[in-house]
Image 1 (cartoon, rainbow, N blue to C red):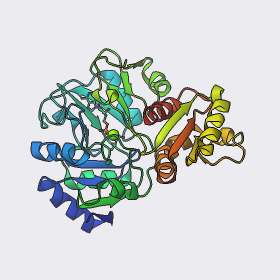
Image 2: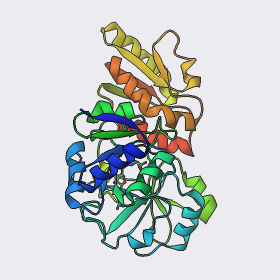
Image 3: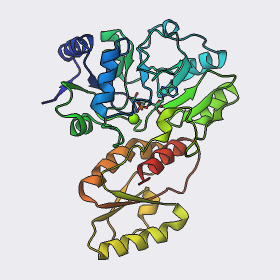
Image 4: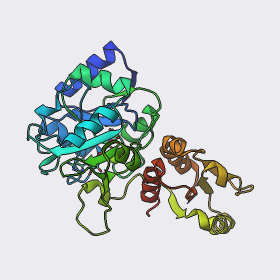
Length: 329
Ligand code: TXA
Ligand code: MG
């Protein structure tokens, strides 16, 4: 039986001893909950892959506290990366560098790079400071399921598989960190998130974006997998096709299916008497609510019909990236 614990001296002590013994602990961050283990310990890192059922070519992010010297772990830190770190860290930005090879090679699945993240969540900082080790941590869900934004979400996926979950409340960010490749001349976004392309461009003048093509070689291996998916059927419609979405709803309801629409506040006004879950009004609200609404939907609906909000750019890119993957059946 897994225990959910408030973060205090006692639970931090227990978390530390689990980590030092090669185990895994779930902890909060400002994006989603992570499942952490000692990045220096290969068998501990392998345990994470086992617990999640994660494909073993999808590398993990190493989490450190804000005073940790990342120069110990990575080789060159380009000037633009220093500027970005100064501006956005601690925060929801993961930066990929050339690795010094100090952490277990299981973390990066044999790549010569290492993804590093300094979360801003107070509970995450306390935990990382307490253990004072680099902590490899993917999101604390079963692989391919929706990422967890509360301790209860983690419990639903991992009860019985881990000893403790450090409870830091609901994650305010709601979608995973932006992953930024800092190994080249310019920064390149590998996964969009709350630190947007526009914010990076404003800080260092330029920012590339890597678009993974189906069947191609993935620069960030996580991109090629099905992800964030609820346990029910899903369909995704562009806003311009919202009336088709409503037709599908009506047809499936007639067939006796339990259906629900997933949309934003303004689209919710167009759905009439139909059952819906709203993600909110702004892109930031939608990011914060997306995973909890997907998890809520899967508890009662057999089919979730998502209608993409009529907005683009900024945080919306990250929201649409996750929503599209969640609805890829
Ligand atoms: O917000 C977050 O980033 C959360 C919290 C827990 O910190 N973590 C998270 O981890 O989302 P995960 O494992 O679900 O996603 C890690 C992503 C994957 O897309 C993976 O391919 C990419 O980071 N990644 C990790 N190491 C990499 C590397 N060396 N090069 C390129 N991509 C890497
Ligand atoms: Mg994940």
